[in-house]
Amino acid sequence: MILDAARARFAKEGYAGATIRKIAGDAGVDAALVMQFFGSKDELFGAVMSITPNALSHFSDSFVGPEHSLGERVTRAFFEVWEGDPEDSEPLMAMLRAAISNEQATSLLREFIQARLAKALIGRLPNDHAATIRAGVASSMLVGLIVGRRIVKVPALVGEDTESLIGIIAPAVQAILSGEDDT
Image (cartoon, rainbow, N blue to C red; front, top):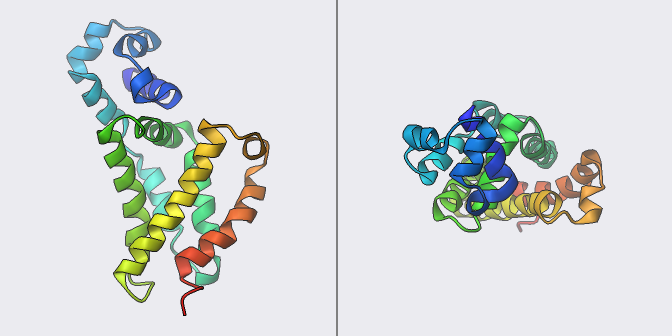
């Protein structure tokens, strides 16, 4: 109950905007009870940021399959996790909002995104450095799309259906992740 309220509040307002008092109110409990269980806002945030096994497997599974459809699978998995089930998407949105003002959140988000893509690409490209760079570029593009769509709320992105956005961005992600432009 407290974690659900905290997850929703961090996702909505980010780390800086969410308060123990607001979270306690959302959960229907006293703020002292929240502090008793979690000790601090940082510790509550850390508990909320546990990424679900479902979200992790979505990303990992997207790297299984034919090389020619890698970009489409990765882009689709990204949207499914970031815009899908609130249990999967809210911790990520909270982390993304908080990453702007909280080093712990920045570290968690960086670790989550970089680890998923870089580990999956190592061995697929000629060298580990290329895999790491390409993972960073692709993840930055995809996170930027989520920022534009869900946080900044760029009208063209908000109003566009997910399938259309996947069709637009997947070819670019494909080129980046597969190293198609390497000579």
